[in-house]
Image (cartoon, rainbow, N blue to C red; front, side, top):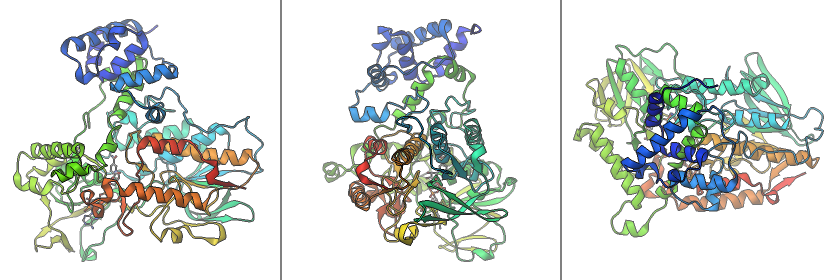
Length: 625
Ligand code: NAP
């Protein structure tokens, strides 16, 4: 028996809730035609809103229940999804989105066609990394009953969330979209969970799903060599005790994209007498109080850092090389109210539809990336949708800087939004207006013993330099050395024009090797949230391993021809997108490999198409022997 909840508490909860999610959840529970007739929340008039809120409060007062509803039958699910967005989607889109409300715990997972066969003696998979993607893979193998070991260079799970511990680090997509469907409704304290909570969430998963006991910490992969005579990977690991060798039948690289910090080098750096910190090597006891600090970089990290540092520091100089498009997020930094928590726990379906609506905002993003030549001929920058965003974000800059023109002029980028990874504002623009913060846009000439000197000859004295200068993103699987069949070295292969893979996951001549979040795999559009993709890629890799085992074979490898065909199509698709065009500032974008002038990090495909590619293994493209 649930305790009776005060209706005023419930009313407050509904008032704080995502009303579209309330609408769809309530309809799912009641089938009430009056609810079905309501438009999406943004179009509700006062009477419609009152009707919805009153009905929701009345229903919840009598029926609040912590049980999550079962997934509705397919036609009903699709109807509810259309109702949520107020738009009818096509079949391709439905296929990509149907698991986003996450009624199922384990969608897409690979399965044995007729129970688990006897596995070859000693068969095991090695997963490199225990961040989000390594955990997704490990949980997949747990479900299949395939032995595995996770090799993690850090002393704890968490990947990038273990490495990055700088002030105010947190997710910049709302946390309900940053959960696995197999571990949902996590009790986040804030709408955008902070780094330590994300780390705890990942450790919790590692322990709950039995991965932790299969994880060997402080094991850093140095070399991986495929032994062709035995169809085994031989791995050399650096451990605190020295080098260790292990063998695995397959390896899954889940090492992340933001693994290797980019440490810049400035003239005179060695003479600087203060400290230089990279956010990925943050000292636990750092205190900015009373210090003069330089922050170099205004990517997601530099932007997250400024406000908390500026609160404490005596003076902060922000060194900006290239302006960014920085946008606000509703509820960023806000705690999850007890009322909303109660709703998540007691309104059946609310979590599912809230998550769906939070992701739905990204469904249209491909539209920002495709040029409109007619529009450009008429004087537009890129296309109407992108230009509208540009105007909105420009107005946002003006509003946040109190109209200070000398700041505004230096903050507006000269390239189109969505060229680079969007940066979320946590009060960065406002912090620039503080008396103790100065925006510096002259290039850095050198470091001196006491600070930073810019090309105009100005010297700024600082005690601490924070290099929020990002990661060596184009160096996939680096610095480990991988040797495939015929002695081929992976990094040699990739030296031609940067890292490439088939679907971001497989490389010919590297049998039984997979990558999660590999080259050209970050979905640019279509919006499904990265944890969903980690599961998809893990499932794809597992499906290949399962198929190989069911056939009684010991090698699965992508064919050279399929790899080349895929990459030719990828280059062609990429060439049509904003990122490689002048308006996209390809020379200022870590998604692009500037050395080779090609898209490197992102998948150029329309999201639902890419989703289909990653959920259907084309066995004709595989060599299994
Ligand atoms: P980043 O986006 O690569 O930004 C690096 C910044 O450093 C840029 O402003 C860059 O300027 C500047 N820079 C680099 N080298 C420089 C040099 N030699 N001199 C002056 N400036 C230099 O790196 P990040 O901010 O660490 O973010 C990396 C990625 O991590 C993000 O895009 C995001 O995907 C992820 N991230 C996510 C979150 C989150 O979700 N909460 C938080 C942090 C990071 P230019 O623009 O001129 O190159």
